[in-house]
Length: 84
Image (tube, rainbow, N blue to C red; front, side):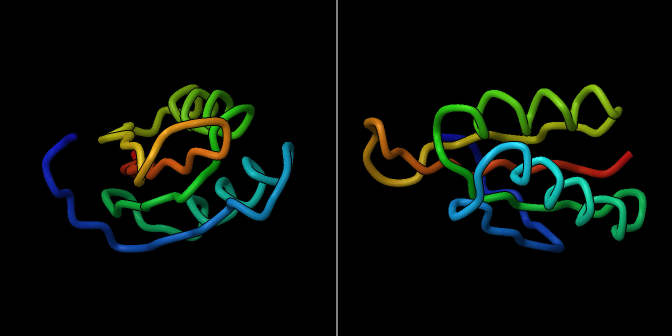
């Protein structure tokens, strides 16, 4: 488990499916100021594979990615990203 990182904004995309998971996250990041941080609550599977990778490809910094609670097929993760 990583250290506690304070975040400026939060979005929960656990009820969304790809590609909306990334679209909603990207729209939130676009509204942020450079240097602000966003915490994204996302499911395992496609969102976990695609959202962090896509944000990094856009040049944003992935600060942490932690498992929330128990693992398994329905695992939920928390991604923290800084807008660059």
